[in-house]
Length: 317
Image (cartoon, rainbow, N blue to C red; front, side, top):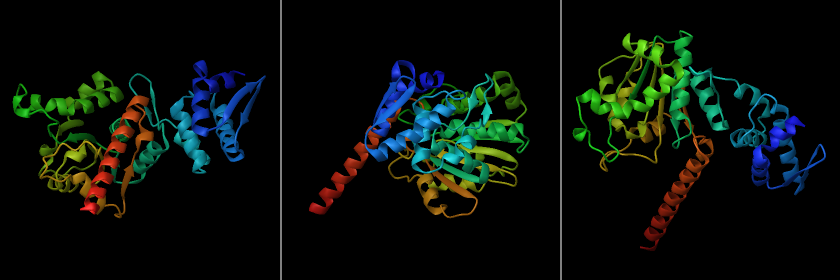
């Protein structure tokens, strides 16, 4: 009975979500769960609920986990569920870090198996956070000697020249999300100590020019704002024993109109190169907030409709 309570969720929130996702009727009849609807849909929902009940004792059942199980049922990949649920690491506060969606699981697996990984997806899909978590694991396991995180200092409406302070102070706001993620993984005291002895380096992309980055876990964040020349420069900095993760959201490019995104070009040029993986995350991988997921979908639909209208207008002319 406790498993059923966990499955249904507070105020039946989980079962309401299950009904919507599986397009069936679900009700409790005594201690039995009754599913009504189309035979194929009922069979699908029954598989999902069976897995959820088995995991209810050890797992927090929420919409993200329900989505994950549904994706695995639909792709006939249930055998990989236990592996996917394994914690990647824990934060300094003891919070477990693991994949919450099928897309995130594929992303983590790609980082484990490849030297260079491109992760392209919307805000809130875990691109940067999971990359930092994997960097922390590699460092703790002594697989690398150093963690290097970098971003292009490209303005999103603001101008660097009007910000107060020296260059370090001016670029700090661009690098702050990387500081926050690393502090969460290591704790403030350890993070500060690692920064002081150079084991963690956070710097603007321009600082990478002319260097060879060996035995390091390197993350290039907000890579949609690299130029094609910057991306080539960055990727060719890679030395022996290093791993590179490049993250970006191609719907949020802040480059001048006459500059093309290095991330878009690299994803096309390098897609068939051995030891390089390109992972595309989607709105269903957004775990920051359900509202963020809806915002991402709304903007995506708007852009798609805009392209269709432009295509239609072009064909008429």
